[in-house]
Image (cartoon, rainbow, N blue to C red; front, side, top):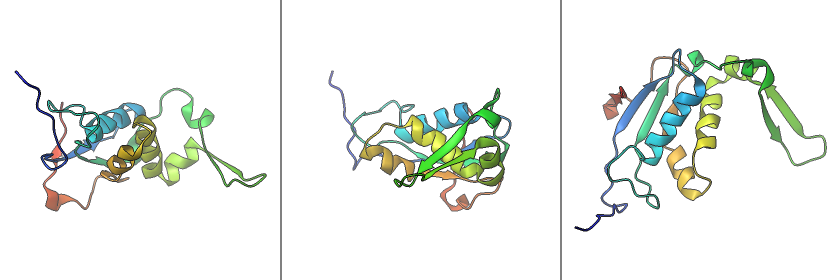
Length: 142
């Protein structure tokens, strides 16, 4: 019995919708990262980009547990002295919940060029409406 390896020509991609309303941000991001990598497929191949598309809706209703809203910060640095910018997650979730979800998913992907391709298949929306109805996405229910 031989193992069949998936090639990038034989990969079939589906579209899935994840609802983040009332769920922890990290658990939703972990599930989205697993779907983007293709780890939940039976023909998963680590060195091939075999994941699916993920649409995350209701990102503004995702929950941060504990004191993360006050204690967690999103930090960027321009590279110049004094160029550190900090944003509290309470403010980030109120103004840009899509960015908070995308950052959480990006941190859970591998650190290579395959992750850049996978992150392009992540679509995050703050509300319940999304613009990908033509792709006929399936609601993730597992």
